[in-house]
Image 1 (cartoon, rainbow over the protein chains, first blue to last red):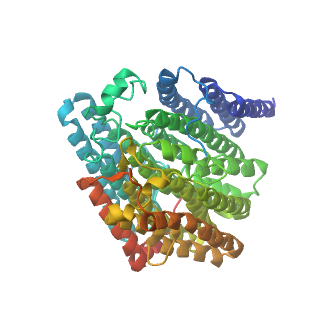
Image 2 (cartoon, chains in turn purple, orange; image 1 turned 135 degrees about the vertical axis):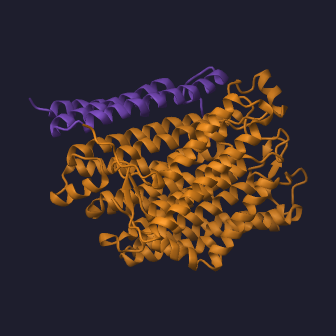
Image 3 (tube, rainbow over the protein chains, first blue to last red; image 1 turned 45 degrees about the horizontal axis):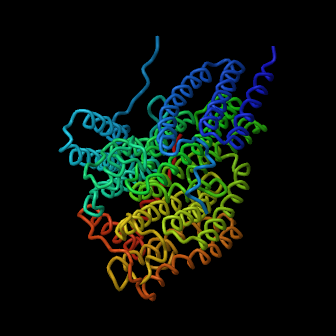
Length: 99
Length: 519
């Protein structure tokens, strides 16, 4: 069984996430794309753990999940606070600060 | 049978102190009555950061300078060595000053720079009520303490995974506290959203880099990565992974072209928080960059050298040129911080083969001087106010010297130090990093750096000219009388800026002795 497929899949997911962050306009969707990137990293870590025959990568995936969960808490709180003022979660509307 | 990991509590004491104080701060927030919460929180935060500083100094004096050669503890996850301790002490010391700025209560009529209740939507009737209410928010202290703990962990992380966790521990509270300004709340919230989205994006890159390096070398321990790279030539995975790791760290250090968040967040965040971010985050991020490149990838110098070289030039040019066009002082200082990040990278290039160059010592010294000067400059910004909070627009500073000669003189000192004029700390720091880079043959880079300094000097001096030689506007801002905390910060930073410029010898020696990594 070749593990390359999993690495390529993870790379594709990471790229989709990165492109999504750059092109999507809704802060929630941007945030979901970042989560996609983190999860593609998890897939990479687990694949490499399998390839090297160690469990380090799998344990690291747990760390990443916990950190991602903490990030969701903080991120949604910040996005909610600005949404309640502006009634919009579009990152294009957040344009008071520029140049 | 699982062996318990070795834990040197003495080496971990600074971290335990700060994180312990942060946890106590959370409990105070939950259980202490409202009237006593502010003084208690300030005391806990000062004891936490000051205790962290003291614990670092005591450990350094008794262990590292007492004949130790650095130790790796917590099952290899932490490298407590001289460089790590120097950086930890710098972070903790600057954090004490930042906490003092947070605690200032006599400048704003509403008695605090932070919003009374962050959950109230900006601009709503309840928000207008709380604008004048003198209730204050105290969540900011435990959050800042967690950020300080994360930074101190970041500079001693001997393991990419710990580095990632520390990166998040320092970033997440910063995202929150940059959205807590009492005035111009929408701007502050916008800054928090931008900082959060871009910061999370950058940490995803760091993490992917971690995964690729793990795949290529089979370990995330910095020492094991170096051994693995020395044994077999790095393949494309290592190069890619290293690039992604460095991108994630350069983002935190606000190096162009990864700087787009910096001006917005610096301007939108409450000014004490901006001071904290500008000084402490910079130290932590460069501490991690130095450790990653020197310890983990020291043998692969020619892989990262061109990248750092190019990024340093871009950062210096972008910071200096765009700084010229700014009309808001906080934004101007943000571009100045981008230019300074470029100068710091010049020092990073002074590593030399096997780390015998003077780059590490020079960069650490520069971080200390830059942190002190920058906290001082932002502290002066909190003094000059109009009816709507701080008066940040350049035109409002016209003729400030005739209104308040002392404020103008102190600001002038900090601006001269940022510009790198001799007899200030900025000059000594710049001289040290440039010398380190030239010793390693990077003189074209130093040439660019000197030119960029000359361009940047223009916008610092413009403010000084404006303060001293322009007639004051009729409806100009008022200069607030600072309370004890801000006065202490200004006195300490101004004295240190002058002292490190005139008599830098002792601290330079200390930085040189401290330039040792283990791991």
